[in-house]
Image (cartoon, rainbow, N blue to C red):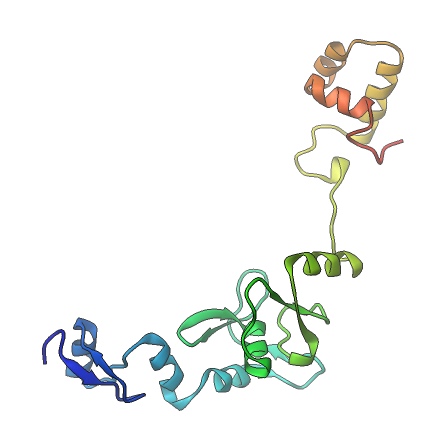
Amino acid sequence: MSPGDLIRCPQCSEMFRAEGRHIRRLKSHQRACCSQPCGARFRNGMTSVDRLNSRLDKSGECWLWTGSKIWNGYGMIRHEGKRLLAHRAAWIAAYGEIPDGLMVLHRCDVRSCCNPSHLFLGTHDDNMKDMIKKGRAVILRGEKCGSSKLKEGDVRKIRSMAAEGKPTREISIAFKVSKNTVTRIVSRWAWKHVT
């Protein structure tokens, strides 16, 4: 057998042109599939749905993903030769393809949950509104923001100095911030929450 020869896929029986990797696999008595998705579908006789279900803990209301996870806690699975978030794979297995531009969102807010009844489709805006509605939005203001140079006491002092008639330039030098920052603080465009 040489590259370019037509061979039949042992998995799906489709004809395909052999490449170097197919020939190496056949010479080492391994299965040579026509494509990665084909090999993934038939690997160990398990479908993507079988692999998904084998890694779910269905003992509670949330069906928790017990397989590999990415840094933020979402499960990850191979689905038809591609890496896919586990909850998205669960949606596809239960309801079919996900339309373009939509995300799979959680009603339960458990990132590793793959229970199709806890999932719903929505846009990025829907996801942000859901996050705010459920109180998961973290807004860092003032000195809680890591890049802030000022404290709330400094802001009060800046406003009092401006009220006394001190020049913006003098205030900015005293607090080692820009004149623009001082102007924004005095006009309450910045640090609005400080009274």
